[in-house]
Amino acid sequence: MNRIVVVGASAAGLSAVETLRREGYDGALTLIGDEPHPPYDRPPLSKQILSGEWSAQQLPLRPPADLAALDLDLRLGVTATGLDLTDRRVRLADGSQTPYDGLIVATGVRPRRLPGEGAHVLRTLDDALTLGAQLKPGSRLVVVGAGFLGAEAAAVARKLGCEVTLLEPAPVPLAHAVGTEVGRVLSQVHLDRGVELRTGVTVTEVTEEGVRLADGEVVEAHEILVAIGSLPNTAWLADSGLTVGDGVVCDQYCEAAEGVYAAGDVARWHNPLFGLPMRIEHRTNAAEQGMAAARNLLAAPETRKPFAPVPYFWSDQYDLRIQAYGYLRGHDEVAVVDGDLAERRFVAAYRRDEKLTGALSVGMPPKAVRAWRQAIAVGTAWDALVPAGTSAPDAA
Ligand SMILES: Cc1cc2nc3c(=O)[nH]c(=O)nc-3n(C[C@H](O)[C@H](O)[C@H](O)COP(=O)(O)OP(=O)(O)OC[C@H]3O[C@@H](n4cnc5c(N)ncnc54)[C@H](O)[C@@H]3O)c2cc1C
Image (cartoon, rainbow, N blue to C red; front, side, top):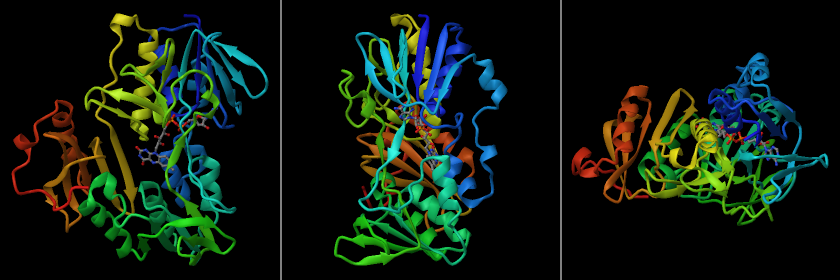
């Protein structure tokens, strides 16, 4: 293999090119990214960058010298517009084509939007700087969507002295992901800090005054943040012959077609540890999957390894750290296995079928939840770990 192309110059793409070099690949290596910036970290965007604690200079994932040492053909500010699987070429917006022997797709996701003009989204450095500049004491921010991203932005805005309204269609924010009881605890944290939380409301459009709800009411705002989830960046792969369906569909090796792998937020792969197809939008997974895709691309077919991680994510809201291992979505039962919900210091465990599949901690030291990682990795039976009668009363 003499020519490898990686499309998407962020966490997964960077991890892929670094791994290729570390594994001894010394052929041509092209990294293509449509943003003008060298790879930078996204989690601080809704935390330290939005709050103004960090400057943009603290965001790059690697210093320039480390990037230079990778001997990349680094093409920033360039969009991949098409893929020809038969001729093995990536088409670029400038009209050129880049041939490859091996390809890694790491184009991530983009925010879903609402009809109407003038709302913010929060995905890129530029998004965060633009919104951050508007978060002044007394200004009124409406956040549409009370998922982790919306909740983090609401927390920062409150700390900066803004009036914040969180609008959420579900009766309890995040219930589908973490369960109703845990979702309620996480919401209460915002209510205690003076956020106005309105649940069961659907926003239909952004207007000049604010946002319009399904019943016609307009919720007024100086600034609006739309945080209603994301869509995989796969438009450039339409007609390529790759299977695309809520992400680039891959097998357990992260392979989408012969010599074509996908990694990070854009990849929907089969995780054999859970026996499920998944697409994970977490920072750690992007790096781990970039690594796995790169190794499998270089490996002989019989030495490839399935990508079977226990996913991990964290979220910071006010002074609380939320951490989770495993796959919480679609759980059948939640049980508090350490600490106390009411004190907002606890570990909750998640069951799917008869197995432990996830654990989430709030306000606990990292080791309290890390201990559960291995139990999830080996597919521990629920009954062996969770005493009967500790379940929270809901199953999401
Ligand atoms: C504000 C924010 C806060 C977050 N906080 C957390 C957190 O606390 N914890 C956590 O675990 N995760 C968090 N995440 C998620 C985490 O940042 C992502 O999982 C991670 O960035 C995914 O990396 P990626 O490389 O797969 O995709 P991305 O980071 O999305 O990168 C994909 C890159 O490809 C580029 N691209 C797209 N299409 C093309 C094309 N056609 N041609 C060329 N380039 C293209 C994109 O512009 C982008 O630069 C957060 C994300 C955001 C946005």
